[in-house]
Image (cartoon, rainbow, N blue to C red):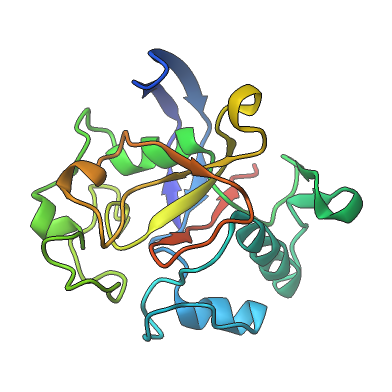
Length: 216
């Protein structure tokens, strides 16, 4: 896990012509997206379309990612970040828990930009697997250059689920995902891109990365 320093970030959504500022507390974020071998070792499942232990897990829904975070927390003797309501519908987050969780989209973008104002942290072919160089498949994590804070595959390879509801009044419980994937053009792999889908949605270019709170 990489320690991410405190700071501020301004998020934008051009679709709704809105921008807002978010204060970021120090937290930890995984160096890589969750790999297939890590996912299998915790969840006992191999949902991915592409083969490769060190490739990022995909075909995982937001719900799957939340369950994985809780399972990993329990496995390591940490307190679970998420509680489920009736029939698993309503998920609540405990900010005092010391276990694993999804990053907020503000944390994700802040970590992706890594102290720069740029929407890409390097020359795209050197940092990301995307449509022009992926060969229509995911690739082993950590084989492209990291960003200045040591995070790999923040752009390209697979999109990454975040905790946040996108726009409850319009889309209900749709959740945000970030970062672009192996099938996206260059413009799809930007730190500022926001996409969303239902928490039960899964596809072969969407995975996740885990974080943890920093407790003093």
